[in-house]
Amino acid sequence: MVSTNEFKTGLTIEFDGNIYVILDFLHTKSARSGALVTTKMRNLRTGSIFEYTFKAGDKVGRAQIDRTPMQYLYAQGDTHVFMNMETYEQIELDKSRIEWELNFMSEGMNVEINLYGEEIIGIQIPEKVVLEIKETVPGVKGDTKTNAMKDAWLPSGYLIKVPMFIESGEKVIVNTSEGTYVSRA
Image (cartoon, rainbow, N blue to C red; front, side, top):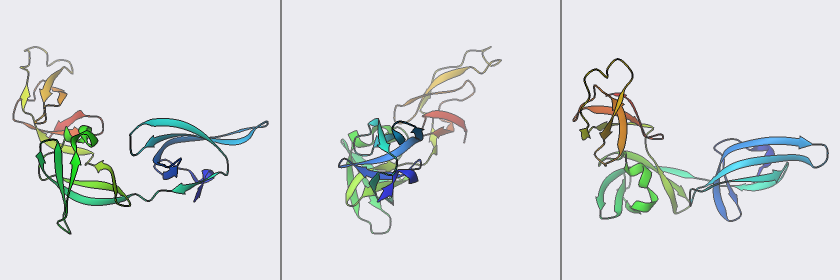
């Protein structure tokens, strides 16, 4: 059990039969009602975000989330296969559970699978990945004076904005949390 006075960003808790990660919290105190802790939490099963206010000193269960390193092997229809590099055990995840991450994943990539007991909560991919530009629109001559950007598509079909000098076939570094261009690789 963990007290609301011990809350911190990134803490995983069990509350109302679900598993949440605390995104933000604020301790407030008023003379009339006593101390309160307003939290912004993400449900790890559904991905939804909501706010809840606890009384200071309330206790909630701590959720132990284990991260297992695995390798992304291949896609088979809407199912994606991952392999534990130590035990060679394979697991399958449905496309709907990892839609955002699929924009930046390639076969052979190392990821972390988040587990709550035996239940798979989600996956963690590296914050920055190197990907090849599949296709870009041609740059217009004269647009190089400003920080002009153009459309470029990754192998997954995801659209990002890149500087005018990036061409098809070049490798770039992409921020996976925001889905944005960082630099040339």
